[in-house]
Length: 115
Length: 119
Image 1 (tube, chains in turn orange, brown):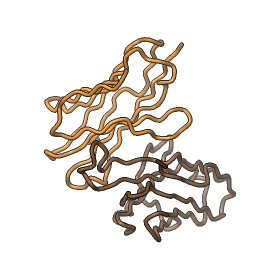
Image 2: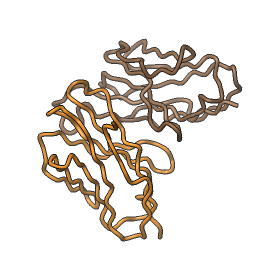
Image 3: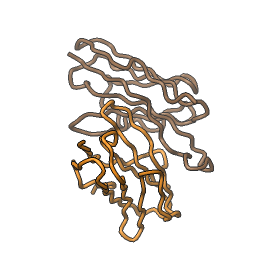
Image 4: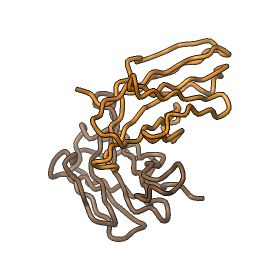
């Protein structure tokens, strides 16, 4: 079974729409970390956020927000008022207490924001 | 602050040639990772080092691949001989294992990648 599932392969929205990218994870550890990375068309992988399993407080950074819910094992990412520059592939990832160096990446969600 | 630095950014080589990819991790980071990304397989961890020592190389495809980390600020990934199926983007990344570092301990920071094409 996949440790991190990003069921949405590709999403297309029109600029200024809100969009939520889903991430569901699976782990038996009580201590773990969740991450989101952005890969724009230029190809680099950019770190966006890290959340530990003991902190379920939602986080907001500008137009970005993250909703961490342990009850549903989800760590969803919402972009408010999307812009063309948000077009990218977004990866969710998990690392567990057993080995924090081993990251489990989801397959990514490609977001297309059209003008 | 300087991020992870990789070279070359792009390389086109002929099958059978040796390819060497280079990486300079973020200063102060003690873990270094080599990932490969392809459309078919997504992001794959090839090998990672902790304090310059290889810890897990189970992702290295075969004996044609080798990686070294002679010191804390430099690592290489070598493919010899290269084959067309090695064409991919190779990412180097680094992290610190100090979990007390606010919001970034154990976070992996990636370089810009080395785009390898073997023809």
